[in-house]
Amino acid sequence: MNGDAHAKFKVAVCGAGIAGLALASFLSKSEDITVDVFEVKPEIRTIGAGIAIWKRYWDILHDLHGFEEQCAARGVTTPEWSLVHGPVLRKSDIRSGGFDFYSLSLGPKVLPRTLLLDILKSKLHSSNCKVYTSKCLSSYRFSEQGPVVLRFEDGTTSTADLLVGADGVHSNVRKTLFKDQPRYAEPQFSGQFAYRMRCLQEDLRKINEQHLALSGFKIWCGSGRHVTSNAVGEYIQITTYDNVPCDGEGPLSDPWVLDVSAGEVADSYQDWEPDLTSLLRSIDTASRWAIHVVQPLPYCVCGPVALIGDSAHAMTPHQGLGGGQGIEDAYILWRLLAHPTTSRSNLAKVLQIYNDIRLPFAQKVAARSLANGLMYGFLLPEYDGLSLDIVGRDLGASCEWLVEDKGCEAEWLRAEAMLRELKT
Image 1 (spheres, rainbow, N blue to C red):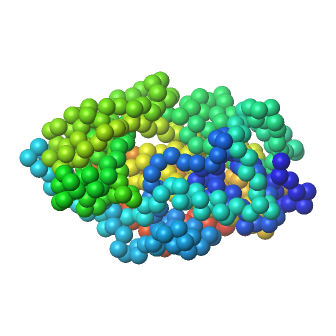
Image 2 (cartoon, rainbow, N blue to C red):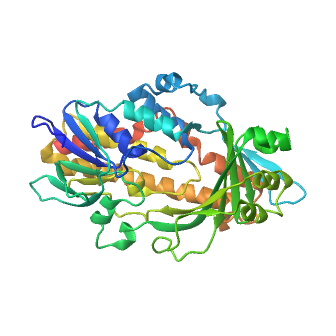
Image 3 (cartoon, helix red, strand yellow):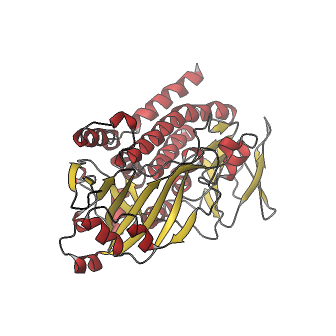
């Protein structure tokens, strides 16, 4: 495996999703750090059509990777953030016709996931970063003085000074870290199902040239559930969300992803407004995804092992923040590792700074995302009897931190101050 006796650190990253590739690409900028990336799949690829990149995360990517130029080279325009608006919220569980009740003035730029991964992969420097595919971690071990030893299911091993688990909600790194605490080791069913579908914009225009779904990002809200629709390329991407009872312990025993009848999904909304029912009836195929999260962990660092992204704080998708929080994890961890005062001798203390800065922040973000999803379905008790204006206003306010200029810098300044304290 990749190695350099003169390197400051050797870092092993398990997982080549957004968080893992973001970290590897940032670390590639540090010539004195070598990186091995281990991906379980035969190739680096992603699922899902679009990813929401809020300004907070865009600024990180642009500052480190010239993100605007990278997007432009791939035919994607740079957003003028003052003109990027969020979804229109609509009361839709009314058969005679719904109505808009709030328009979010703030929003993210939605990019194809494949484009983001392509840019991150292009920033991996072969001189200090190697990628290995078809590598499934089976276990790891470390001693107080020695390196982390990684063992893979194919019988091979590797060593590193630091192991970073970026292997998602199913994380094998997390399962080993919390092997005696299944509550944290295993994913948790959130009690929410997402039914994912899409239709061609052209086909929808044939039904109705003035169809509401053609006019931009919509969240169709109703009692106990909601639907999102947004244009991504030539398609309208549609997701319906249902909330169901769950025991709050462990993963769903049924398959997490199932092909389902699009007609049955449409039938379950037959009492909603005509534009929504016609949108759902234009769909031929649908799949049901059981949304799983990670229980709030007591820590995401243990010795020379750290978790980032979904492996540390997988969350519901209702603000489009999971990928962005993985980028933010990667940014703070990179800056800590690359700092001139960080060395093998104080690595454990430096990783604790990462834990103390990022884990509480990301867990608050996860709680806010869940609350927003419940608000779309009018399920938060504290809003009972309040006007839709108040619901919309509070949903809008919950996004303001995401569009601050270089919003992640405040976290870094806190981390840097804690680093300085290590020297005293």
